[in-house]
Image (cartoon, rainbow over all chains, first blue to last red; front, side, top):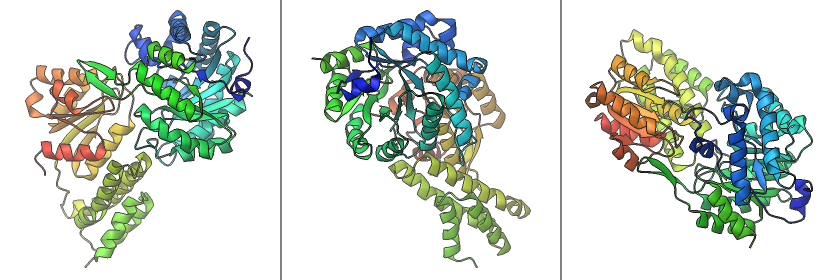
Length: 291
Length: 217
């Protein structure tokens, strides 16, 4: 039986997270253009299989398949009548796959909408939709709320506030620094870390992004501004290129494993991968970290 | 006679991304009898160029470009009635149809390209996201577009850029329109592989590529 995730991290353990979700579901037959969330209720066995693949590879923290599980995103997919059900069920499926020893992070991604003055999503409404998602995830039995791929600092703050309103679970938040070392909205790792630390987020970090090597620069910047937070590194498996009509990410599993070791030396205690990765990358990371 | 300082104020309103200030200055320009076309080409437009450069260099980011684009749009809209009265119009460099391909809902990059093209004098028809090959085709035909721009961010939807090109070919329209692609997984090699005419890495580069394709450089 697992101890609470923050106790585990405080004890100095490094946890291997999981890798890409959407591309895995697509290779299992999810049609292009259809969100993975649709399969949570329709094809739960495929969601379980996805989790099992990463568990077998050595993941000690798996994320629910709910990146697009906020109301605005589900609405775009015509699934907004089932926000609570989808998030709760996704958490239950991950929990079922994970068993008693592996942690489950309740995954929350951006709403896909812009906040004023660029767009119409108000801070208050954003807090509401994030809280709604977090409630479903918490009810399904996740160990922590895991917010990721954030670009807008205000949206990230709204997500954290919503998560904290919804439950008492630990809250993690990572950003995608994909544009010249900042998020597309211009947020630097230092700014992100400081804002998250001020809100009492338990773990901060970088996910997705551009080249995974860049995370080597981001971690020290985040450590400096958030000295008490745990650090997360979950980058893409390289940069995508088209080769013979196929998108290929250029970081091999061995490279991701080397980088994972370097991330841990810089203080990361949750390490995984994002776009372009597969259970092979996670297996290489797990082997390297636990040798 | 307007002084250079006034044009610089117009540029600065765009650089600072202040739509209200751009509107107020445009009204001031009208009251002072300044040629509205000069206000655009010597004022707002150079401001947008500065922002485009900063964006390409990684000094400015999405919000900066969006707010500057909005300021420029509001400024031009304020000058519009006077332009019409004087039977003037900005020289249109070309007609561009733009959108994100079917199955892909990523909007921001495509919208930034549309904003920059509009700021630089192109007539832009933005079809939004999740645009089918047929919709692209119909619009290209309807407006007699010079350029078609397609965005794709997902590793799975990028293939639809090729589908659209094939659809254009089947309809016999491929030779009448230049095709430009963009989005994270795309590259110059990908553009060549699917028979596109150009590729751009960001909104600033897109303007240069499209200008070259229509011979406006």
